[in-house]
Image 1 (spheres, rainbow over the protein chains, first blue to last red):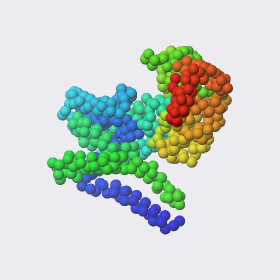
Image 2 (cartoon, rainbow over the protein chains, first blue to last red; image 1 turned 120 degrees about the horizontal axis):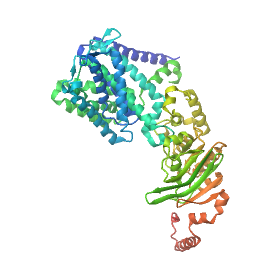
Image 3 (cartoon, helix red, strand yellow; image 1 turned 135 degrees about the horizontal axis):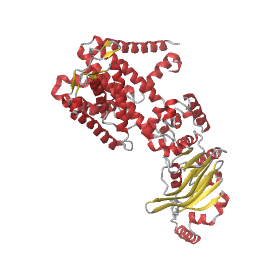
Image 4 (tube, helix red, strand yellow; image 1 turned 90 degrees about the horizontal axis):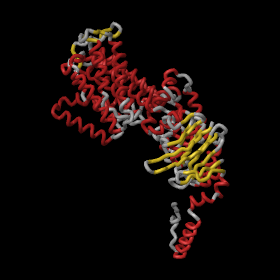
Length: 331
Length: 274
């Protein structure tokens, strides 16, 4: 074992330690920054979820925020004074995910035969339909006024009150969602999705029911969106239709495209960049959107495949770490 | 198990692509469907695989009628195929292109795990298949990065990896050079088995004549002749369909002679369309 191997191992340890230290230090930041990090984590969860449909199965879904809305309103209706129902947070988290999945299948059925632009248009409309329905269902949702005073979330007796608490919750959930999606990506299901993206007709010719495959993608992705919505609701303790506009759907899709389609590492990078960018640009309030747009166009022009190369994915990192540790001679 | 077409017709609008075709394919043999361009060869393959619906008649696999089933069900019952133009999953590795074939076939097995191959079993089968088709060295290469000839072989491997009893090969030699075509023919001949019927649609006559047990000749959507390679080779009607009638042939010869006399015969001037 040469010095270089030891040096590389130390380098790797240093990088890992740095990541852990950074993650542990977040709670000591001023509250504003913790909120930004929370927001990044929520968008990572959403984008990783949407990536199942857009990145793996190759179905462009522009109405993803509808599932987020379903989750958020599930919490608003089941854990607030609205109907005086006060279910525990963890229960609503699962209900929200299930409601999201059902909404995903409901959207999935009519769009099964659509692809590309047509699918994008219909999913976009679906997102708007959900928002407009919420906006008009006054008895249920208070319409545009929204629902305020949602219950404080409570996790096994631990009240979640500050952004720091949500930071830990979101961090754990982000890791779970990323690990789960990574596992799916590597499983035969992930391979079938990628095949579906390339040639749907051939996939059917291999004896695979593409209907099931697509609905599964829609359902799982929407479940993640729904769970994200429940956390959002419990964090804000206020929901209104304004939070679920088309802009939000677009932001999640942009995170995937800017970061790197079908790549979890890319999606994380995309979420970090696109959530931080508007915050950084606060100093130039008037020119914010202009600069934002210029940055997006620049990225698309210079790196059309996204910020992160498809080769630099979670699998690549895990393989690197593993070979460096177990059989360093191969590296 | 046998695959049978019973009085099958296929109309595209007013065009009759296949007219009252009855054919039977038993396991254990290699069959070739040949015919001039537009004779309906690919239509037959596409109907069997479920890509095209059948206008009238029945296609049966054993006792099961295939022609009302969705395409993936037909594949699950044991009909696999290749395509006229390569249709691999270019962005996936060679190994993954085979692995995908073992996706669980129904919700139930997906949930319960019953009857499902383990990952290790799946990989073992795929690696064995890669070895059989001499693709082991490129298992982790993206399919789209392979040279054309090996892509053709990978598509062949994908059709055989699940041990389907009926394998449809749509022009496996298209685009291959002479040596590659010979290798392909040898490979397909070697894939003949007691529990498998291989049905070939192919233009390369050397290949068809050398490996087929039976040749079915289609012309204008009808069966012109069916039999062993020797029988088909000497059949007059087949020669007519392919080369034109003897009078036409004489005309062409005369024309060629006069051109040659003028010294202006071009190398590619000999394509005859009937």
